[in-house]
Length: 443
Image (tube, rainbow, N blue to C red; front, side, top):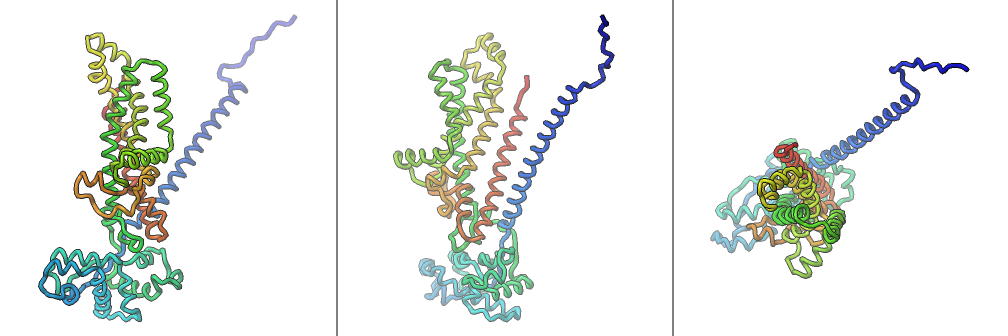
């Protein structure tokens, strides 16, 4: 009988099974790297597209003209009575624009076959309202010549931004190749130029006839009031409910049903909350439609489950030894929670709250159902009460409103609005990370 010969394989030799396992691990790592690379590529494409399409909204084409504010047009009685001057509508100011265009061309030696109406049509329809506002603020300027910087209309702006060509407006009734030729000449002498458009950030929405004058500023204020309502309602309610469920409530079938309900509410589509807000807050409670107070209440309902879940997770992360030590030293249950557990869980609570608010800031479906659409946002609120109870819009709803309009100038503004919205969201998420790292304690 032959004796078994012990194997002389070295411990450093790699078996076939180990090689296969290492190869599988290497493939898995490769798959992970590829997945991350694809995700980063998609993110890069998204960000690049948004920036490429949206940055042009922050620039606008302006035309500088010297306008003679004729007394016979603006103050026929000549008494500078503000009530008489107010009777002159924007239609009374419109002829002054075409005359100013003709004078500018004559001064610079530019010849054109365009009629007076076509010359005036190169200027935005907001120009007449701009002049009227200026005259009403200081009637003494009537009879003088004042230099104004007006917006050009959307077609001239689109031509300089590459949206339109002479061929594309061949059969258009809104613009012509002759107007584009004149635009090139006025650009050369500096009468027409593109500049940073602060009114896009601070201004209000405009009608379909004046896309070049549309801004997102009022919608930003509407979003601010929305977030104030969400903050002052969802944070105390969400934290109080979390403390009770996690620290005081007994575990039974009732609390189990509540926890399941909260988890399900966190997954409910946002449009359902919009329908709820429409049925309850507007139709039943009869709160004013399209107001930030209603939008804030709807978004509060949507945000509370997220805050409860994140707050409970933060409370659970506090070691039980903290509670035991406090109770052992004679603290009551209430003192233990509010003096020891809650301060230690605060970073997670703040982070969850900010992330929940950031999610609410980007919601548009609930706001559309309660009527917060962009065309309402035309004036800045004069007080906090007006900001809460007067019709307004929010950034997501305003972006949606622009995106559904046919004019490419509004599409450009929708992309620009997305940039501003993403800046807000990025700021809020960055703040959440900073707060967590600033106040987080490790055990």
